[in-house]
Length: 358
View: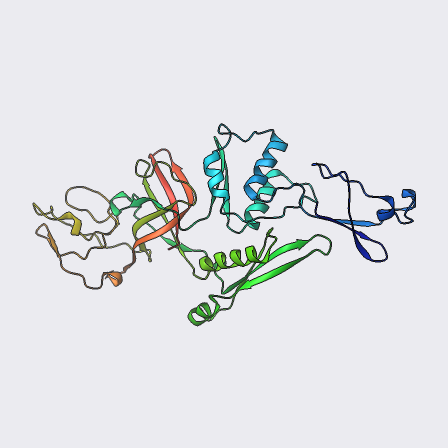
């Protein structure tokens, strides 16, 4: 407990005594009783500021919640201690005031939304957290030959897009109000490009202006663009342990229309041909040689003969390549963040949603 405010004729600060770790304290009658002597005459309004306990890191608050509510000790059998300790250093101090009953997962959601950087709480074999860090090292490079789905529609979450953002911080429980900061670093760029001014607001548990400024900048670096989201299906052996917030690279082409490329009969690849230069589409209708293998596209511009039936020359502007009524947007190599994982156990494959970040 930091301070206790007492509302009488005016608002004054009083000093409590006998504070314990359950949040109970003792005040003198003279400070909180209406007549200063007899508590039966009524108590003045009392406002308390501060934390419920002297813990201000979101990860440590989660550990404390689990220990107090579930009796879960903090050790290597119940937590991935090494990862949690490393990840929590990314998170700024917060003030979580538990003024009303909530479920544990609701408190954790407040911590996730109210921190400088978003994070994921994992409650699996061993509890841990993972922060939303776009500068993580890339864990897997997905090549076209690895991609098992021929239809790769691109999605974009326009709800996150904004020209500026407001971060509210330092919540005052007595007045039910916040302080706030606004980041407009990308506002001119966004308005010039899209002629749209859109402000996103975020309520946080942060307690200082510096931390709120950091959060506002981190948010705007991400949401000043509408970033594509691509879903890929790969063999689980290629990516055996996917995790949310993993960074991956992938070479993908995205189908922009419902029509597929026309069926093309292609003979066997010439003996000794350099397969690394082949430019192949990711549709079922396209067969390379005698093997019915679905390929994505390679970004190398090709100059190679496939059998005797089709010659692919040097396509100078392959990004805008069109074939009949089908049009593909070639994103080439993208770096993205895993935001969704779906295990396809019947086929021993995993489907991952990747949101481009860099």
